[in-house]
Length: 167
Picture (cartoon, rainbow, N blue to C red):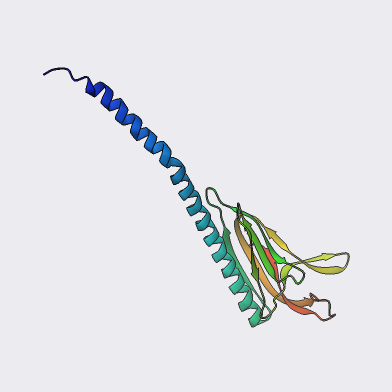
């Protein structure tokens, strides 16, 4: 058996080619994983807002009462919820949220118009203010009430008060 010099050149050259192929494919794998993580996070948050919207509608149609909604607005590795505003807009009937590197999304509570927000009292006046959330898990307490004029007509409107609580 003789000594083969091709083995000395062939193996390092093959390893170099394999390394180049791996390095060239890493950005593609990273990009795919980032898109998958964003879509997964967006889908999860969207389903949580649909769940909240359905609970608000059921409570509104049932009339006075309270219910509790557990929301998981968790984040992925690359994507997360930047913010959510419940009771956004002039008439307090919009839920707005934004995910990192994404566009703002809106959930409109109309047909019928359902004002939502956090009831706040200041200097004897009562206001329905938007509730702001960020990434995380929340237990929201929804309460159907009719003691605040939300549209300025002088009559108490039916609205959903949303607060963060445990029971």
